[in-house]
Image (cartoon, rainbow, N blue to C red; front, side, top):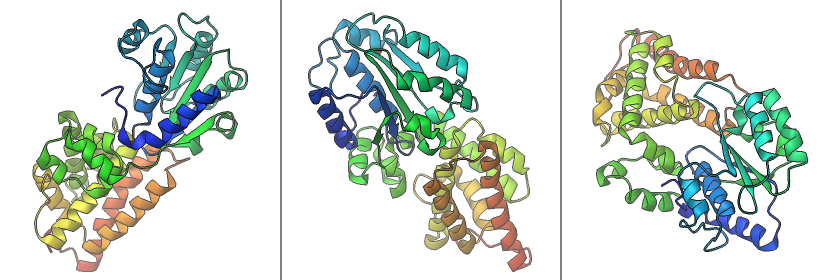
Length: 340
């Protein structure tokens, strides 16, 4: 899947094709859009195309030349990928300095050297400032591709030196058709419509490790909300998961609980986390769920820019705890079942 051409990227590929046709490919591109729409895949495929010795089309690497083999093996001498070392670490200035040194080397093969910076918003201030000179005066043939879900967290000086390429949420029909070839039918049938906007995240979450992480997170949250566990433990349970993913999980759990209260039954596909959802449903009223949903949607719309990630994780958990507390205050401490 690493070099798949995703069907909802047609407009972006058409724009890149026009750049290549007219010889106006910029030295720096900023790919921005919500998580899960395939920006990183687009960047890697574009890098493979630029490095390919015999592209089949303007936007397609041939997949069979020596350059393509190097790229697939992760050993192309003219390609560098820069990303945070883990879920908490920033991209530091030393990594950017190494990238600048790489860009200054002579090209080993072909017309380009390509750098892809993933989660570019995670560059610290020194790293972002260190990148500016390369963006202002790039070595001949060097293309820098920045990928971000939070462009507002990049300094304006960096954004202004890149040509933007925006990736909106995937159209549900195209996403469902693509996922139908990759997920079991019963899993796809249970997917909430809003999840289709981020099909790559959905596919990742459907992996065994993704489901296990999701289950651990909702179980810890249910324990915190019902007083059987600590809020800090609920925060820690998902600390290795991007905070944007945690927010999407919580939106989905709210949707699952609303479904349970209105339909009186668990959604298909939620059986494995039913116990945790039942506990949350007993603790949080339907009215409070709608308030939670509105708050989470507004947070997603705002892009969570400029917020401390740890404080944001704590806030998400405390929002649930406060929702349960408001239920106790209005009912005198008595809850009702998820279907009620």
